[in-house]
Image (cartoon, rainbow, N blue to C red; front, side, top):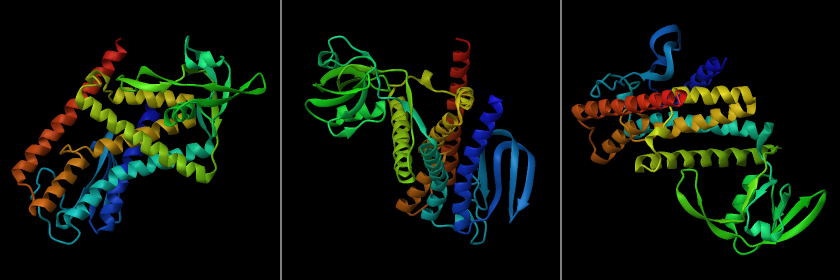
Length: 350
């Protein structure tokens, strides 16, 4: 069942990505010859309004084939205003960007649904209090529920960290303990800690950790829009930073995951709850959007770079350079896929 869920989720994400390309291409009058979910031998196809819609045997991706577009023949010229290569560079950039953009839109839609249905997150309940910490000195105890900090209402554990970091000086905590509301003054100190990329950083902290208790937060439609926007931007920044740290060598290459890891994550989420499945689908959708914008020649980002070059230099890159760079891009992608699978197998084998 987990494998079926993985394939359905991946196909859905690929469909939405390619639909972005398709709609933008049709908007500019480009003929889309093939809309494929999967690669390789087709197992189902249907002609509709001049486009062959197909499902192929290998479900790990997809593509739209437009008239006048062929990476192996960059100088290909097909007559007619419905040819991709006859469009202006900025129009081709919009068509290319539409795929990743569709992934960001899909993630925002999913986060919006999650916000309305109820997002599960850590409760603002204190679990452990560190020794000699500002919280312990102020009299904070395990089980205290933090209601407000200064004038900021606290609903989730994440709100606590954000409030502590964004303020200065002493903080007034309002707590619920044994059904009573009490107040404590805490003076945070700067402590050594690690961020999500395991880098050593200094951070304003009070020395508490969360209790293993979840709370469901429901949002009205206006709040849900804000939640969806914030989560999509936050996820995008996190993935961009992750790629940057990977290139810098801060994140080891052994952390790269492949299709096996993705499949396991999706499978585990589907067994947990529909909200968990929607959340991981949204995150993977953002991931696809970000990664496709990387300036690797075989990806949308690489093709966008070619078109930007054409706008600046007022000429297309030579066919030879285009083909060599595209082949290099495919080699890079294939190497990353093999590395991901290798890491997946290493984890499975312990």
